[in-house]
Image (cartoon, rainbow, N blue to C red; front, side):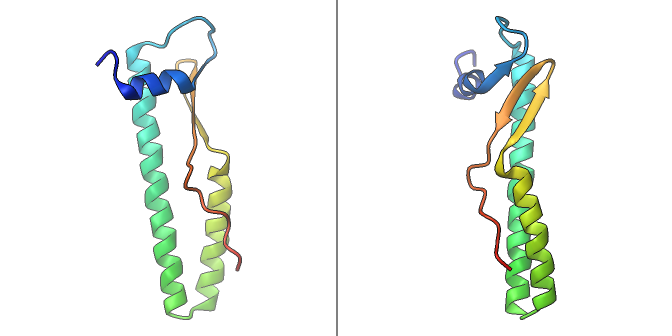
Length: 105
């Protein structure tokens, strides 16, 4: 898998603190695994908020809607600029392109 696509993409996104050094395969695999975990948690949390907000709307529960949208907006701000994952002096910037703008309550 020396020429795998994910590895090439990681190399393009990789910001190396130690200039001139290529990251070992184990570091790349660790960064990739952590990136996938972070993205999975992001997708799960987003779906959970959407489901709970939709339920509050269906139930016409104004208090729950305002509470959930406030929590959602705080959560969205955390992910708007992406997330940096680091491993052994190497950093990978993860962006969540599907981040929705905050909800107006």
